[in-house]
Length: 191
Image (tube, rainbow, N blue to C red; front, side, top):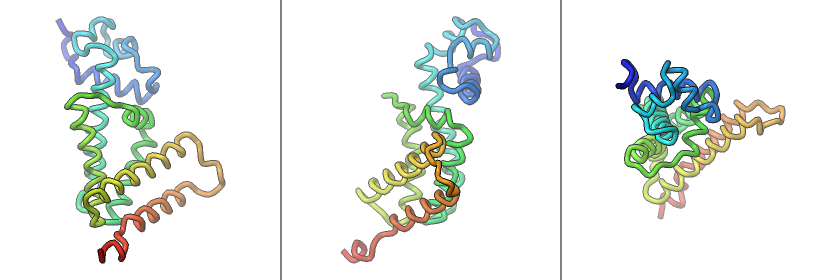
């Protein structure tokens, strides 16, 4: 019989706390069992093991991130939406680096994971669409924005920026460069 109050969601909650505190290497069934007050084998009544738990964690993180990112860009357009998107991406990655690392490397061939991933990337599409881009240009632009912000954040979290120049100033510069690059050129608009 499953422990009263323990459910797959409660196991994911405990795993999320452990991930935040100890990183991916600290995410073990024993650590989760200790945090939930059960023996490790009892967790199998709620999840099929660590691989399934990692999948559920990735889905939860993707969904929560999509909700947070969507909320900050809602009602904004163009450069304002882009700046809000980039800033929130950076804030979440900095505040929750282990979550960021987990979802950047995660892939599961399952409908729930795919839906959560699409929900998050659709926020980026909404932001970039505000620059008037469509079709393949939209896809390329979203990929460029995601690559730029992911690269910046990865370097920042990995202490890759050692020059004395303030990283906030570099981030503001990145935002301006991306906004300029996303504006359709007059030649493309005439075509």
